[in-house]
Image 1: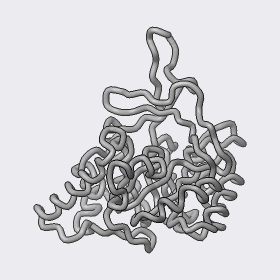
Image 2: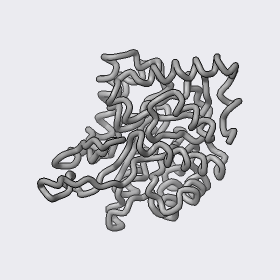
Image 3: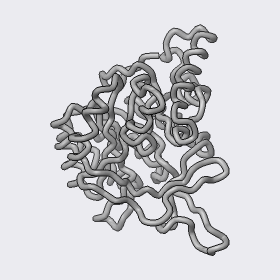
Image 4: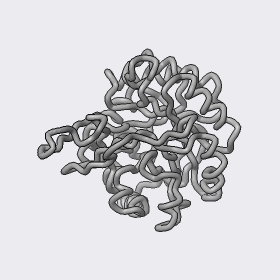
Length: 297
């Protein structure tokens, strides 16, 4: 079950996805979070953010829409208050970092460099406020600039989290790898719309919101397969994972590890079920290492 990403050993390939697990405190009341392979923190920004106004969560028939707006207390507060708790757990800690400008990303990295965080996950789905609000992760050239600049100062292994809304996901992955990404995670949420027909207006104040959950899994799986075939760095797959079978599919598509997101809201300890299911599958199929099935399609 052990995997290695950028020289860091994970006890298993199951990581709690950013934005669905907080910093683990609430979930630790339900199960021992040390049993996870890793935890990707709630999205952090250099300054504290209150998040979006209005409704923030909406269920769909096969997924979950969210418009949280990266609510968090800021990088410094995280390092001071939350990181000691996470480091007391026997699991890999990944800081998910966002920003509205390149300067904000770099300032966040500098603070995290001076902490004992294990890895940084650069969230390039954030709106670039200097370029009219278009996300850093839409155009390959823009992503290349932010990744290259970040790589120039970071002293931790750096994962770059890709948006499925990119103009071309394969070109985006190649650009990020060439710019210095040590690993890639995908996919973030899909841009989606929900309408309140009685009120005759969008459910969310920002009109559109991010869609996650089982409804996006086949598309996420396809994108992970595409990216795994064009880059030679580790790929972490996510998007609608609910079961151990889903994880096996992502690994067969080329993923080194996975992240579990929306499923955490359905059953807080669902990752334990997933981990056991992977173990059972490996025993039944006489698989000694996940390397035997990784990228076999």
